[in-house]
Length: 368
Figure (cartoon, helix red, strand yellow):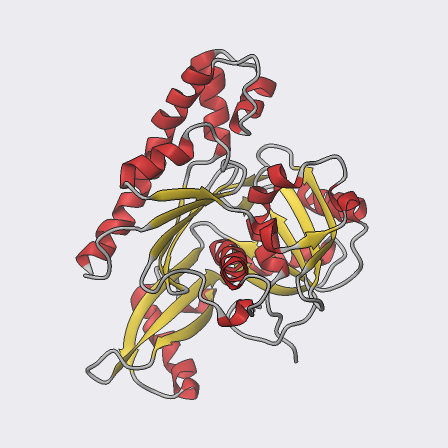
């Protein structure tokens, strides 16, 4: 089912099933720039999905169907994504061998690195460096519990669609950001596929701040060096705004989206810094691991996406913590669309929320 490491391009619908919102987006990729042809998003009932695990299937299926109906999505293959504790992404070193032999050996290697029974997981891998010395190679290992993958695929089928790719959410965000970065660097004259997304050797921390989880993906030269999920998202900020500042739920929701009219901007920004410190402390073990491995002294850039991208002061706080540039992701920046696609919504406000769905819609599907 994993389709995120291989395949030839074909049209896919990006279906992002988040803990707070379901989003579906379709791209037409035949022209000079991809075009958004269909889009919709619908809210999910709280607790329908918790920590990446689906707690109420019928509510989620209903939300997917409603989202697809609003977007008038055609019955085409779907790319979706998973995250959470049942997903493991790890770089490993193993003996040099052919791709065919590696497919056999990867199961034995996984037993040494994955805290699940080998019979209970789905595996995918990609050789990152074919020679790292001592007759060894570096491999990216991705493992997910089979029951979660199958349940996610069945959910999409029950909603009336065919799952073609089950990706990892952090990889989908990376795909969208790299595509847009290459397009911006290439300009109108160049080819994004031939243009690097970043300066060589630059470490970038991609933070997708969702409803209940923040996906962290630290990458360099297109390679994920450290991936993890932090148990903090916009729900936590909303709760603290209500509890500490006495805001209504509607006011707290508006504050998380940067709409501060009539609210105490200073108090909200200070509280964002206090709660946001959990994201900073959650990042530190990742960076300590990279430092200990001799792979990085620190990060060079931070990119924030997701529903929490516009939390007042979060970008400046994280930029100050690491003394690096921090930016808000703009996955729509390299795409075209007709004004009616997004209805009354402002594409500039929506864009940071669409990293996963855009990255999924840009994916390469596996063809038989």
